[in-house]
Image 1 (cartoon, rainbow, N blue to C red):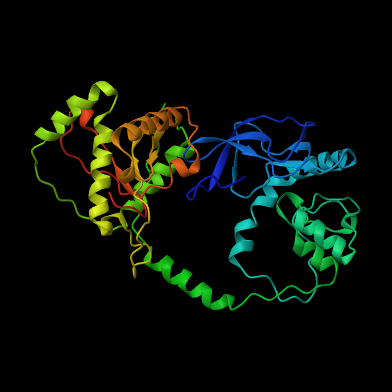
Image 2 (image 1 turned 180 degrees about the vertical axis):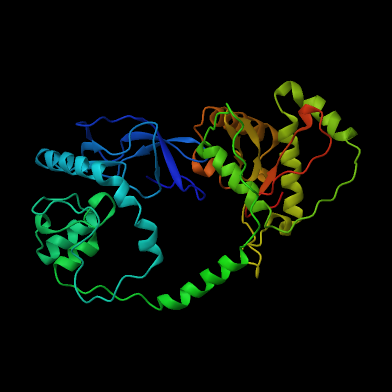
Length: 363
């Protein structure tokens, strides 16, 4: 499961373009994944045969988890299918220990680990990562005799090194790293609201990936010190300009984006952000993100380098972005590269409101 955005933690399989048994070539779109922002085609990085689909359409998987097994040749297909069946039967037991493995450092390298959770059957050639295959050739290790300890029983480089008798490099100072985590957890102790039982007859519907991302951003915005200030201005000249360019398809949203971009060019500090609490990050481009409501959530298409484009080019670009957003076809750089965000509710008769501050941006 690829990370299609910087905030994506899991993805949902919308549909598979390649079925089991299909031969695919590097660059082929094999699956459509719903991220927290859009539906995107995902390409394969390898040539091979789709031996087994581990995550069918409609189900989710965390970023980095295998979603299918790709065999290099026909003779590997049967082995991959057998492994997929074994993994699917033992999958709930495998996934549980993963967080603890990441949180606790491994024991001292006294002996190679042989008892991994849900290992591949002895004497069976497991599906190995490309790096693991490279190491196996280098150290003359028979992959059929290697027990895979990776997710879904995949053979990792560490497994090959262990089979070759190569001692893993010890982790550097794992103990001090645990202290800040403990301190952070104590600081993070915030009273939690009581979870009330649902009203009888109510239906609980889980968030979509996009709704979960919106919820996460709303919570994160509470940790950013912010204040709001405003005053009324006369917009006679803006109104006159709008009436002049409206017949040519230019919207008020585009005019506001252009005005904001011109102001940011004169005041770069407003286009900057404070990410670490000790310094400013000045962005080299002025990219105006504009909130757009779509079915099932909210997304912010980005007008890149808005200060350098005239209003007619901006208008054309904006129409293309909105069309792609509502079809859930935006590319990552078209929604996650904003440096300043606009949110406009004027079309609903709203004259003032407080928008959610996107992480890492000004608003």
